[in-house]
Length: 336
Image (cartoon, rainbow, N blue to C red; front, side):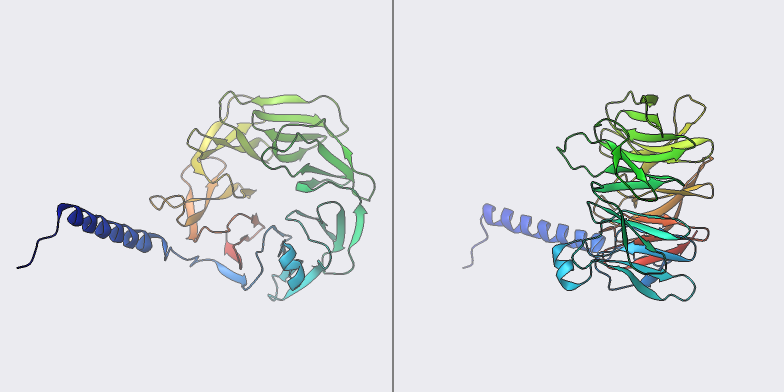
């Protein structure tokens, strides 16, 4: 005569079935997220491509970034021609590890090994060290005369100054005293603007007093900074760890919201009256796919351009025709 299962065994069996159902649900939701079906793959089988910039003729990006990559010979800066798709190495890292910080002008690509700034002709050649002792640039901008950059800081890092150095070469000097974490920097005329957790500040390019432009009165930080002729754009984090995209007139006043949700750990860029950014796909959770979106600087609904796996998505750039981004092994382009 067979026995019926005990109540405890029935409970354990029910829990096991529930666990399998949850695993199956998670698998169906996340194991095959939508791929980047609209984006074109410019290059595949890359070693963790990161920072990417474009000059309308080519895209430039950093690969590798680790000691293991150094041993494998993939610590490089590469170029993809937008005319014929040809890929070339313009900086072979060798003993150096190029950082995820690039800048470009009409002749040169500027890069860092974490302690010095170099320049190399955009079509390749020998890199020239122009700023020795340039401490770990995180975000780097320039005008006709100087570089300005933020020093990379991690959690618990001491305050760091904003640095500058002559573009023709020379010594790096602090523009500001050491500051709490600073998340972005931009130039407007003779003024350097920078974003801290408690708001937007400015200082003359020649040095001087730091002045508050916008004081963040919330308990959550302000992050990032873009600008056009009339406005600044930044991210305002909320109490749940997400952020909204905000617009602040250069004429003063309070910021207004452009879109309620933006991923503040990934790049956002401004081009042609639109801001391009990444965000979670609604209903898919924090570990699901992400969408590449754009929203007009004039306001209105945002538009999803494409979506795909979110892992290793961070870096983004835009030129006159296309959007460019990278993931763990590929470089993508997408029409604007």
